[in-house]
Image (cartoon, each protein chain N blue to C red):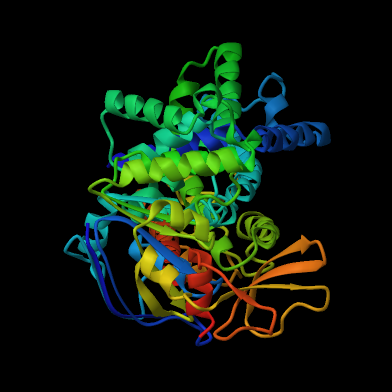
Length: 270
Length: 286
């Protein structure tokens, strides 16, 4: 437990001090605002803002999460391999601290630190919106979106961002991750086989639909469930609270599997 | 902590044998490990530190079997380890890095940890730099942080691999003295190819070559291995071809060579008293 807490604390501290952890999301956000396709401005425009606070903050969650998670995954890609690169691994491995505890601490500490700017952006805009529109309930809906969409999704991405660079160079992982993220979340299933709108959807289509009742800003979009003419529809059951929790569970199980593989891979390499 | 090694082998991927049936007993106190690059010293140290598993053989440290997870963890609770290619986190200060290491070594009491870190920073003369990021530290300062982390938990077994590399002469002497003082009733395994470091600190020494033990005994015994084999040759011609040239100094008429060879490497060769380095060369040249 001490090793886990120590690893979490110091990995968080080292990661949150990295300038790129703040610069990458800031630049992404600025770019997004400049190209003008963002709800970040519409939230404060009476003609554009969704009428319900729940829809507004959930839509904001989808945009912030979909956009900033790309940088999140890329920024975490060097965290596990850097102990070897910095040649610190030998003295860490020679301590009585269990490797699983250190790995878990590193995973959660680095992921939490990298998520801080995302949370600052999301909660910052949510609070501003709540004050501006006199919708205090927006804070509660934002908390729900954080727990049901951001948390499982970021844990899923962080696990793979730590594990995959053990078998390929981190820059290659970053390129592949950006491609994966666009493919898994933004590609229309009826056009190309994709895991979008399945229980594996990293954007959390099932919890968005079945637990947060989100159907897009105009209320007519589908974020989960069968898509006529699409492949992989066996992974797209009808969205219900049960399938939503199943989807969250699947992402967390995949994250655990990635971390276990990383642990075993490192041990085998030693 | 007594170390008992029997039939230890380590073969890397590709079939490279780093250790080849090593048998060795390391008693309490300072113990030196000599050998050329690739002799297997670092592999042995990594196995003893519990960070690498052997391919075969048996190792016990203080009665704990290193072949088991429980045994390795028990040894690591009493271990200080300074690897040859030490790395540090550049984003942390020296104090933070030591705090992290202390926590991983199980020193969970904050007061004890702070006191111990303060003492170690004092010992390695880094108190004034304790709150500077490690990124800006010189090689010698980084090595001193490595020494501090190795001594943090007051270990019963200290394994140091090439610890004086990167230290200036004063720091080297200071560190050697520190190691000797620290040893006492503990076991300190010092691996180096700087023979003088062994001569100044260890009573007993082992020499490895190609993963095998080729000598084990006292420093005096190793020195005696070169008796009758050390020669001084002054020549203005080429260096003596027979034997191993230990040193070459400019002399009045040409160069003065110190040579280790089983027989006189020329008619003008004069016998000399052997030193530890000569003994080491006499043993490894066989």
